[in-house]
Length: 410
Image (cartoon, rainbow, N blue to C red; front, side, top):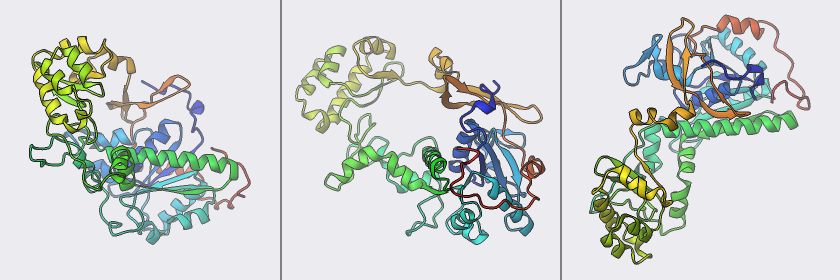
């Protein structure tokens, strides 16, 4: 696939973004801005660049870097600069003076020591949106802890929401199988940046936007956490049988069938018992008030019933009856399904040398069109001199624009 829209027609065309961030949360934010048309300049240290270049998953490399790096940094350009070197720092400040957005995820205090903290940057460019990701916020006893997805899933309580409990109520916490906190934090940062740009379009004033992995993790848990805040203060209990929600009543969960697994969401237990023809389940479900309190017993019986037939048998009965249920697919099954094909979710990106890598596309559609781009991630420093000429980095810095003037970009 190639760019699906004229680059000038994309909503963020003309927006200049400097991405100082590494790994996933900040780069995923910058990626989404790039998908929507922004010119994203990835500012990297000359020696090794973004540490994600060497974060190899599934033993997969691409063009000398990790395949993961190319997935999360596609459609960007690379500008190499040593922020500790005065000459390079001066060039970076010239970039900042001409940019619309700046993103970083250094630990609290690092940018202050370099002289690129929010106050200094906004003094240099009052119209810029200064966007920062931290692990745990700018203050508090966890301020200096490493902000990493698995650690934040653990500290935020999220890991205790997943996995079956044992009969005695114990059972290990289970983390999510993807870096969900990084990704949702990046999405929150996109929201904050776009809101700040909208305000700038009216007032001409830049902004500071801050998000943290911990705050995003807590926001992600708003549904069960709100119930906890308004309850008796005790930790919510997972079910020992087919667990899927600490506060969900039966039958909410994933169940084994004769040939696989099937998910069953919110549906009346008595109606479900009738549809699958289970007298034992119907007897247990007769007391509606027990669908939460007795959920382990109900789920245990439902599990016994569903083992009698294949998933396709049950889905053929339950789906037409309006029961919220679904097959539990592995990726080979998913990619072979017509529903996946209809999404056209996979795109091919290419490096400057022509090497190709298949990955996902931007999930957003604009004017009914899916957004594809075949531009892969850049080699470290590949665009440094081109950007220097294009952005006139050796020219005198422009005067700080009046806050009442409209911007060239949103």
